[in-house]
Image: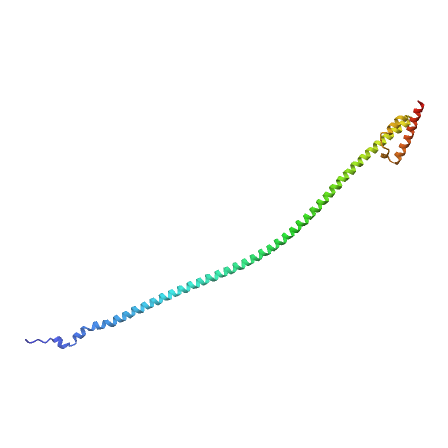
Length: 204
């Protein structure tokens, strides 16, 4: 049995090869698409890495700025603390000086109080002695006054010629309580009164 030749196969001997051509043509396209995907992935990863690096750098700069501000604040606080410590030290020295001055003032006042107390004791003793002297002087003055009153009364009895009463009055006080003139008058009155008494006794 004879086979009938196919005209198409005779005219187009490479037909099977042309049928497999699209399959061979899709392989470079797939390779190109795969390269594009790799390139896009690499670009995406590079972008992510760049963004991450920028974020890390930004965070580092922020932390550095915060650290600088913190250090500056700490330095200012330290300087302020040193100034306050200096002021407190000066105030402490001033208070110490004032305390010493007050202690000296208190010591001076204590010494003055002791001196005043001693003087007060002395003055009290002097005052007591003065009181005693005044009392004695007052008593002496009163006794002298009484003596002169008796002397005046005796002189009145002499003037009346009453020698007995004159002698009686003269015996009521001490001659020593009179002054020199008083004592002279006392002696005269006593001489008169004694003589008058003797005369009266002789007359009886």
